[in-house]
Amino acid sequence: MKQNQDALIQDYIAEHTDALSPLLQDLLKETETITGRSRWSIGNVEGRLMQFLLRASGARSAVEIGTFTGFSALMIAEALPDDGLLVTCESSSAYAEIASRYFKKSPYGRKIRLEMKPAIETLKEISDNSVDFVFIDADKPSYGLYFDEALRILRSGGLVFVDNVFWRNKIFKKPISNENAKAIAAFNQKVKTTDGIDKVMLSVRDGIYLIRKR
Ligand SMILES: C[S@@+](CC[C@H](N)C(=O)[O-])C[C@H]1O[C@@H](n2cnc3c(N)ncnc32)[C@H](O)[C@@H]1O
Image: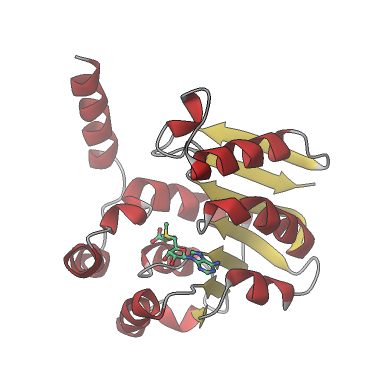
């Protein structure tokens, strides 16, 4: 019964949210065919929420940690102004190859710079207080480190958008045995006890943490 109701709610939300572009539909299809992991992409509703925040906050520069095949990068780039820039970090050449192809096909791809190396190396190259928006969506044990770097590179008023903060609901099964779930629970506690930020956690998909640097 509850499952049916959840499905009804998800369908209703999807029907009343801006639809996915044909290019992003193609990207999800190809991602599933090649990798079998299209569920790693944030999907349309979470992507539209991200675009809403980017536009409402007037973001011009963004950093994404975890490109995968480029779905969320293209969502972010669409919401940036014409002279905006997204730096997106991916360590897998196979995923980066798919992302690059779709960046070339998209009218928003020219706003994206893909850095193919461990994300921490790219983050260390970015100046303090220089970025408007950071999206964290890569290796879970490094979330705490990425959060520290995000707070360093963000300007005052800048936003952090963090995906998977429920880690497939495994953080709720105590004691936590899954390693990624342990890392996420520690990360959530770290955010909860960090000063100088505003924060709200949302139960959208696999859980989102929204953080604003004061
Ligand atoms: C969940 S997927 C990202 C999904 C993407 N944001 C989207 O919504 O379409 C996580 C990605 O992070 C990448 N990744 C994992 N560890 C990384 C690291 N240390 N540096 C850069 N990328 C990393 C993985 O290869 C994977 O493609």
